[in-house]
Image (cartoon, rainbow, N blue to C red):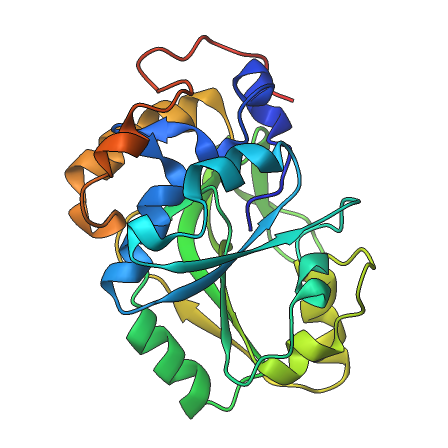
Length: 253
């Protein structure tokens, strides 16, 4: 999925879609595609909208990457799951990845778990400490006696990693051209008593949503080869777009 506006990155995404911001000489999305290619993926659909020509001009049909790429173009914003309704009929589970995520995705194991558990949808997740900007009071039951007070603690939470596997029947159920978020899709499946399972991603993970996380992403890619794939194509490496080293500080949207 590469169609979001990336508003929290401010001016960085005014002329460049977020998945096309460069890390270590190539776009974020290229790191992801090369990682998937090196694990045996040969065909991918790229969901695009915001500055879609930038993505399409860079990747073309994907042959220079060793991939067969098709594009799903949203004429209107369809949220995080609506583009599924624009896909052709599929016969196998679909791996869906947000185009602004850095992670080591064990594709074979992930797909095996999805099939073995007969899941309608598999949600990948990671553990993250989430800071609470207030003092948190711990009290006993009815009498309200204070046991402890924590000043602005960080709470460990299981957070959605932006990586999913979706069964073909679920993909076919998404109406064409209708806005649909991934949380709404999951909620609808649970309401219909369909099986939704979780899968813990191994290793580091980063959602690139702010100028600061964008700067962190460059270090993460260099330190963890499993987050990327083969070398960038020399011709593609000369294409423009800001890099973490040169990116101006921006207002978060």
